[in-house]
Image (cartoon, rainbow, N blue to C red; front, side):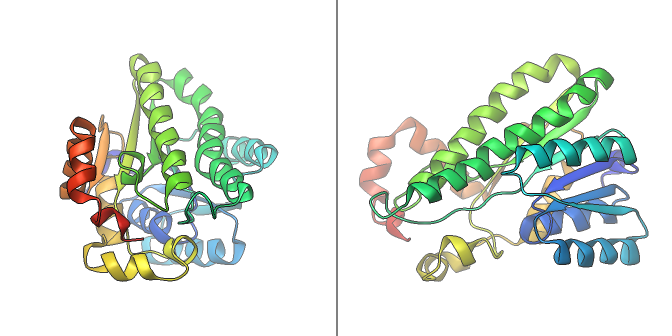
Length: 264
């Protein structure tokens, strides 16, 4: 149980399904006030009602597409006006499409970077002024092991997550003296609907299904780290160890594990 987040305002982007939904439910279970942001209103309504019914805490929602910077400004201004300061921001909205570079469209590239990178930067900029003023807050960015170790057919997605990690690491330095925590979450494949878009032919899921992470366990680890100086959450451990070895000996890893990288 993370008693630090009881009564805190936690904003979660991409909250209508997948890991965002699980984080929202876990935050509510531990007594936080959850503010849900996503594009699909019908799912937000359903989740908000579930939180209020099952956990007895407030759960407001706002429809938001993080590709729309004007809407980001409007929604975050509304939240601070109607609810109060944001204590924790979880930048979870994101998607991927597994494709070879030659087959990927520039539209896919544009959309992935707008959601996965620019959306993270834009929402972060909305919460920073208040956090800096109050000398309190936590920004959690959901990145990926793909941001540490890129593999074939994920070039654009991996590039976007590399960018998220670079942004997160730099931001951590910038706000450390102001008592604001910044955490990156770097999971391997999780059992969510992420792959309904990323892996349309189902080959990747078929190959890695036995190693896929339980979204409830991932959510619990993320919520447990809230309002603590946790630098990174890397899951699963063995995959992160592989990413670390790759940084030290990329040529060796590519030579020995090349076939394993072709699972997509």
